[in-house]
Image (cartoon, rainbow, N blue to C red; front, side, top):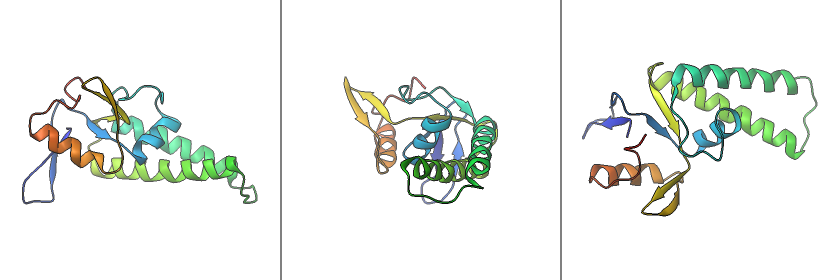
Length: 141
């Protein structure tokens, strides 16, 4: 999709002009901090822009909850989940991708007139279909 794997190796290369599609936990981090959750796939974003935004959101949460006592409220749980997602996604994207690489966050796709929701295992399946020349909706990205 945006990464092209080399058979028999554990490496991948960025395909110029194609975004890397991020799903699952990446989608949740983006939907909470970066993109309109109703827009899936999202607009393209550069890795450096994503890392900068998520790092700022992470710092804001740490500043807000750092002096508060821990509690079991739903609001506190959501903040801790977002803190974890922002940290993980900013680190993974920042370490694995060039800063100028483009990323799209996606959860729902339109396939043959039906909505398909990605799950943690769907990335492999979509890549498999794309490799077999089945239009999985990424050509428009």
